[in-house]
Length: 122
Image (tube, rainbow, N blue to C red; front, top):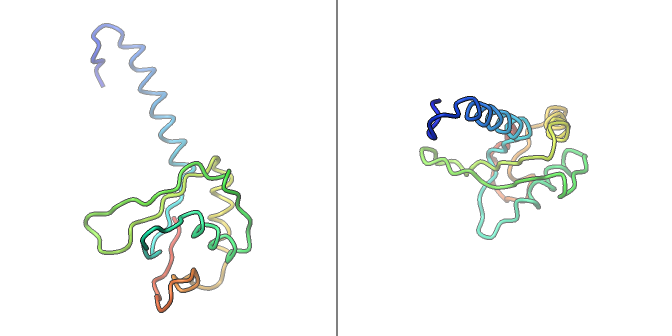
């Protein structure tokens, strides 16, 4: 990408490279949770902690850097929950636990009555 400031192309390239590295690190710490119904005044930490409890693992609030929902305009499904952990190791531990269960986690396991939506992790 050409430097918008004119003459310091090498500095600009360094800044862009560093920005790209930061973006990749953030993605490495990211986990997506799909299929969890949305409610008014929901507590996403409570949802993540319920999932952790069902997986028989312990996660601390301090291990989570960012927790939000991402709106998908083209989809009628509930918005995806995005969890950014402070490290890839924590994310991998959580994702690994989701792959160890031999049953499909469903929304009703999280307290959403009569909801058979499968909860998926990426």
